[in-house]
Image 1 (cartoon, protein in one colour):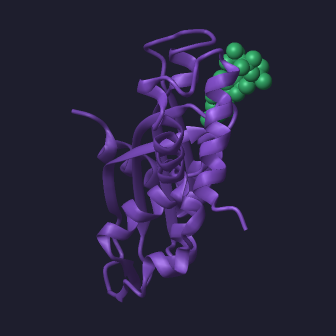
Image 2 (cartoon, rainbow, N blue to C red; image 1 turned 30 degrees about the vertical axis):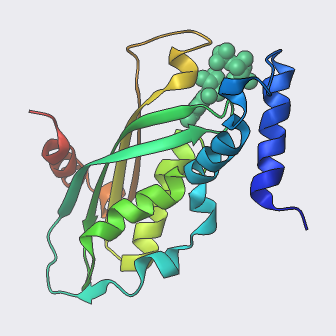
Length: 188
Ligand SMILES: Nc1nc2c(ncn2[C@@H]2O[C@H](COP(=O)(O)OP(=O)(O)OP(=O)(O)O)[C@@H](O)[C@H]2O)c(=O)[nH]1
Ligand SMILES: [Zn+2]
């Protein structure tokens, strides 16, 4: 069986040749392998699954007020152009007997972000994962991101960003709950 890294590297070599560069010139000799390793890293979310990642870090708790985790950095790859989109993710949930280990929110964000994505699906997947792991009364996820495919090419807009939100359970039902969350994540 071909080694996956070698296989990916040989495709990068073809890309380099395909754009008219010489993949054998000194500066580019090691680039296919480097690029292949970088792409493997940028998409390592495909190798992860929710259960292993959470690793039992769900704790019993009588806390039943809103918990907010703000400004989680997010690096993802747009599935249309394979270019990065970069931003922040804000999460809130209303626990119902169970809370999740703090670091696990960031790990869940990364697991889905480190795949080829569109921002809307990424937002939904994070929210649904947190809902399924915690059984919370409600989950809210907001992502604000800048897309390199809009900045470096295409329409070349440097200042626009995209904001997506996914509200589940109580956050969807209650305007007051949603407003409380949006107030808590607002920049001051
Ligand atoms: N909704 C959404 N659109 C995205 C995301 N990332 C990239 N896109 C858009 O996907 C669309 C792909 O459109 P196409 O017309 O097939 O591709 P294109 O010719 O490269 O489009 P331009 O970027 O307009 O040059 C573009 O409008 C991108 O801006 C995302 O996360 N969510
Ligand atoms: Zn794109």
